Amino acid sequence: MRVFIKKVLFTVFLTFSTILILQLFLSISVKTKSIDRHDNLEITSNINSELLFMGSSRCYSHFDPSFFKENFNLKSTNIGMDGHAELSMTYLRLVDYLKSNTPPKYVILNFDPFTLAGDISNVSPVKYNKDKFSKYAYLPFNDDWETVKHFGYNNLEKYVPLYAIFKYKKLSLYFNNKYTGKSRFERFGYGKNNATWDTINHPTHNQSINYYPLKLDPTGVKKALSGLKDLCSSYEIKLICIQTPVYKSIFVGEIFNLPKK
Picture 1: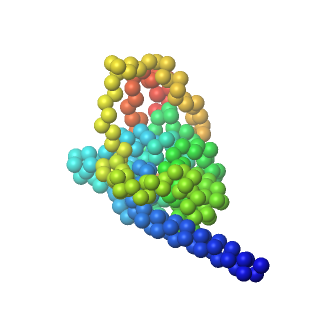
Picture 2: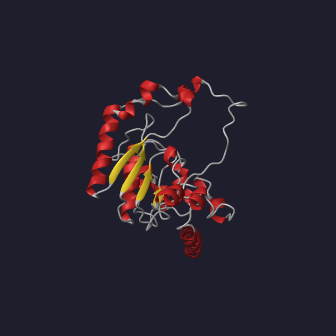
Picture 3: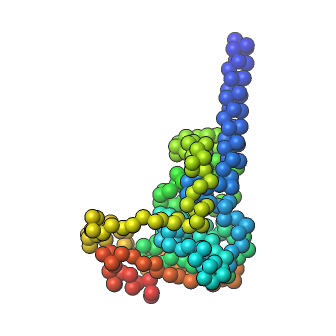
């Protein structure tokens, strides 16, 4: 019986050691790479740009750092987060950026009726793209990012080696050189998209506005924006809000003029 217990314990120890080593190897191998477009926290460290672009996908997809470098000789970085219009996520992303960069002179924030307040004191109820940040879930190796904490990974994802990798089906991205290190962000510095919107074969309709979450909360958004401004001011950063273009079929004057107030 004693021999059997020893064999079981040895097998458990060997198995755990193997998956721990594999987790460590995978974590180190992708630490400075973006394997899934948005996991760019380390990549945007030690950049020290003068101009910082922030916000949701309309930031991630609109603002091209090379344009500002070529036309205004301004070094810039785009840290927009696709799918996250909450100012709470913008706030935390800026906190993470400032941990490893000198403060920029300007922060350009995409700000429009789609912008939500969010709450930095609670785990985000928005789980969109949580899987794309899952390389940070295993906290023994990634425990300093406020952005990651806000996703609220559970204890199994945090402390069980390989669990998050298999849960979010990312193993192939760790090994596949076709993706690893070749994200659009790494190539272009933002979510560049050359696709053409074919409005002849796929016409737009006014009904499309029904799919957008235009549930305005001016008081909450104003309070969250004020908090972001205070953070910028504490680092002597000038915060500039810009409303990026939208297609005319979803434009409603009363709603899209509200951010001006």
